[in-house]
Image (tube, rainbow, N blue to C red; front, side, top):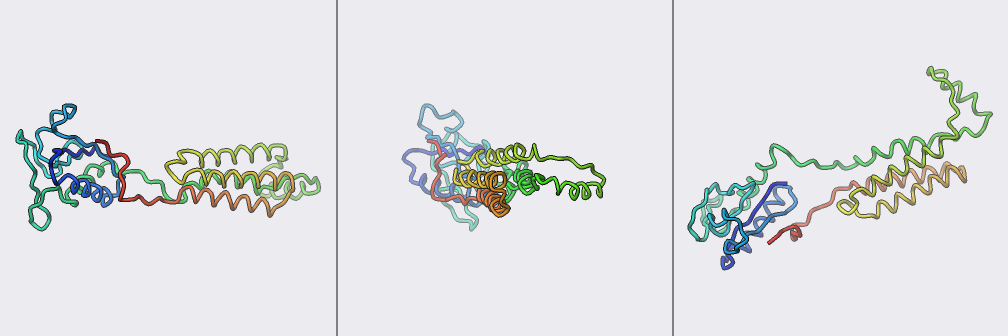
Length: 239
């Protein structure tokens, strides 16, 4: 996330438009809007803010218009893409500075569907046969022998393994839930995990097991579904 600062005078009439252009520039650059605001007359404002006119936008400490600053307290004049003068930094100028600041380290965005990976072990153990029937063991032994593996009776470990893998899935749904889709996918995942465990190990129902697996996949996809960022608000802006 680049460091962005808005420097202004309290009596400058162009400040509201500068904030609006900042929001639109963040949206155009595909970055969540966040910046620090400094009023030049404020005694707590850094000394360097007094070198710039109002309004000024700095990205990573650099003026988006390329000015080095001066000691004159005055309103800023910018030239837009059409060669016209205006009192605020153009949206394209700010967006270009934002894009340039992140070019060397682009933000890592979670791809839709990447949350399926933690599901794979849980799905694998959920659909494995329980091997509770001794009459079935020769058939499984023959299949494993055909691929060069010895027969292993994994029945005693299937329940704890399934429970462990389901717990991992639930932890992945809970991790940073507030910054993604909230706790609704976690609730759905909890219901799905219960269906898998009860359906497979209590009722021995394949239909219930497959239903639980399907709900787990749905919860994971829901959790990783991209969220649209609203342009109208900037909760992280600080004055």
